[in-house]
Image (cartoon, rainbow over all chains, first blue to last red; front, side, top):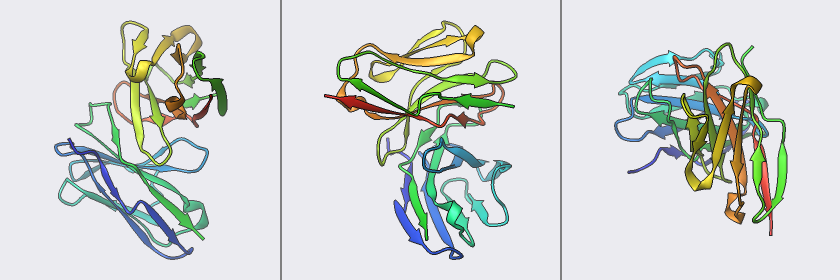
Length: 114
Length: 113
């Protein structure tokens, strides 16, 4: 079974630029999560999708971050414009459904904002 | 406020020695509890989870964890550490009625030869 795929693995941008990350969850997984992991901290949930609908985006900085999962499969997370404090690893995870607590994580995208 | 605390930022153990990583939580009710491991450049992998029942749970790679309600703790243990266990370990909690998972800050494990 293929795992959660993410791209790119690394990205370096200047502040005020925009960036997008892509995630393809495990086939059949209805729930998809985006986490932000700042160096030295645990992952923090940014947004959670159930199929193509948003379940929870309470911790997403909506003035600069956006995410979509239009067809209920893969997802993109965008930052525009980026700030220095957005430097982090962005992790995507998926699970079978909302009641399934076992989340499978991708390798992450390491973003550096200079 | 809901919180997860991993008191040890970094632990070093010798290969073959026993290991215990601490995790304490503060939640309104007993949440579901998890331990994840993250190797460099990798995503998180679930080691074990506790929902209810037997308070000693077995996981993958020889790890186990014990839930102690009176201490609000869920410590991770391994009787004999291998060099390949060097990684970052995260404790996580989620309320029983949704999977909004909250992670601790992590404990980095170094294994000495």
